[in-house]
Image 1 (cartoon, rainbow, N blue to C red):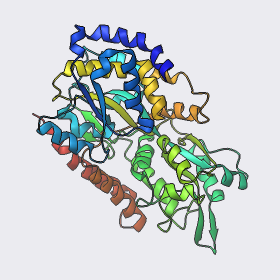
Image 2 (cartoon, helix red, strand yellow):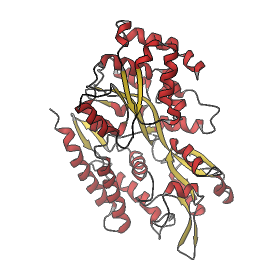
Image 3 (cartoon, one colour):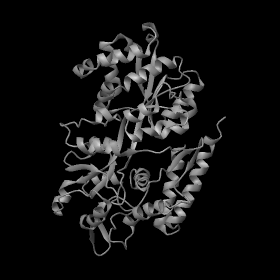
Length: 428
């Protein structure tokens, strides 16, 4: 750790010299709020930086509950106790937009941003500026049970959905003609499938739909369009829900199973779509679990590879008492050397292209993590998240119960998303 920090001291010094008018400007406190990271990654890196650079003595990281951080932040701003920076998930961008300080395209030219960060980092770029500098990404990947694959004599994890569909029946076990005792994949339901919204987001975005876009300074949904893409979200929902339909050959999941992650950890599911950050969680649940990690399968009919990813970026708050100093700290933390340390310590791939040119050879899943980070995309989610979850839940449950067709589910979801987006289109 210390060696790694010392190796980037020169880079930090250059960054500081470029962005500071004088040394005294960095003596003011800079407080960063963010979620807890594996091994307290942000705190550890900042503490190590303090050992080599006195300017970081006044920089601190405050871990906040990710479920309440945005509410806590709004309260802190209202009471005049705002932090200077926030390490935020891209899903919080729209709700926090009017509280964030956008970085102008003169300060960071758009082409420089595109050249520096993977394409999914563009989620932080809106028409009036860059709202956060991406640090790392938590991609959605496909975990697979090595023992079940071996027992079934399947040598490779599927890379495309066509192969995936062929393998699921072989990996599922049905007794008595109807009782499902082993699942090939935890797809098809909503309530007991962890990350169902994100899985559906990936499937929909793989069709070329962005879900929410900024158009003429307005935020709109493109999941129900009048162009040739109109059927694509319909097909994504139809595909996902087919895995819970007992009359389908791919039937592999139902409401009787425990939550998908726990079922996978208990060797009851052959494949589980989860995030890179869950690797240690799975091992903690079952230390004897023999699993692998692979990129999320792709469609054969597209030239673009894509998965969902949670992007984490460092953003300057308008309420900061020293926004320019805060921006300087953000740029230092997002520099290649420091960003690499943060990502490695957090157990997540960096969002920087130059860092991703090197695969961690000591990590057995290093290649998958790097590839998935490059493939990752996110979308602009309105608040509250519970309402967004309800939209996806109604769509899936409606199709599964037969009360909605996939087409009607897409149409209703588009209407509901439009309602949630309305407050963000009434900015002064």
